[in-house]
Every structure is written in structure tokens, then in C-alpha cells.
Length: 182
Image (cartoon, rainbow, N blue to C red; front, top):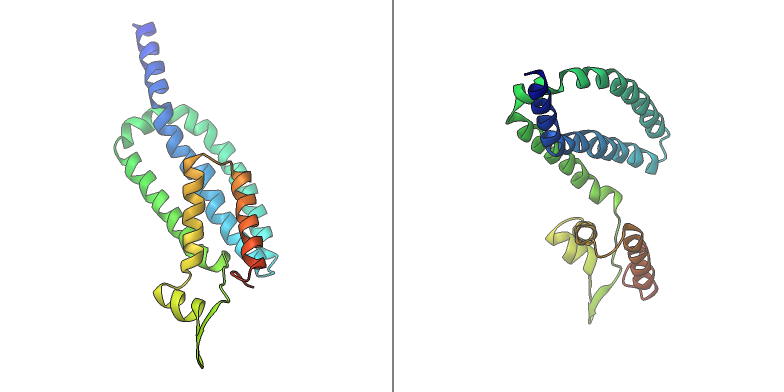
């Protein structure tokens, strides 16, 4: 009976590796660095060194927190799986939505795009950026650029490095022809 129960526990652990890896990856390796890095990076863009200090302190605290919880998680992992069951999915979805909301809110303040082109007819001048695009939706161009980059990443046809060089090249060409401005 001892060998059968050990095999059952091992099979259960192996079967749950995928779902639990999704929970751990989402919470630890995606949400925390994304949210805290975005906030710290935005503070740094504003010239505030507090962002770097907060980032460093949080990582030190997070390191010790992980070390402490590693032993506890190792000893009570099976209890957690049976106790939470279906609620793990809800918790993971909620955390993902919160992370995407924070990232989405930072897009207009971090990603900057400006079209200096003006439509002129007679004495009437109509700036495309302020009078057309910003009236449709403020920060429309940064949102569209972010969406296109995410789609390129999801398609896996281009590497991240290629996408970065593509954005830089597109910005240089559009800037040269006066389509994008400062």
C-alpha cells in the first residue's frame, strides 16, 4: 500500500505541474516584475531615483520571502491543491486582469507618438494629431503600436530583437519623412 500511495502522489504532482506552473509563473515571474518594474521605470523616466531604490528593496524583500515560502510550499503543496481546487483558476485570472490593467494604464504615459502633419486647405489648418486622432481616442497611436507589437510577439514569426529593430527602423523612417515628430 505504501508504494501505491507514493506512486499516486507522484502521478498527481506530475499531473499538476502544468497548471501550477501557470499560477506560479503568472504571479511571480510576470505580474510582480511587470507591475513593479513599470512603476519604478516610470519614476525613473520622471528623473526620480526613488524608483530604483524601491525596485531594489522590493527585490531583496521578495528574495527572503521566497526563501521562507519555499520550504512551506514544498511541505504543504498537496494540501493547497486539494483545499483550493477550482479557486486557483479564479485567482490566476483576477491577478492577470489586474496586471493587464496596470500595464494598459501605463501605455499612454510611457509610449509616446506624435504626428506633426497638418491638413491645410486655404486659411484653415487642421492638426491631425490633436484635432482628429486625439478626439477619436486620446493616446490612440501608442495603443495601436502596443497592440501591433503584442500581435507580432504572439505570432512568433519574429524574435523580440527583430521586433525592437523593426520599431526603431520604422520610427527612423517615419521621422525622416516627417510622419512622426517629437
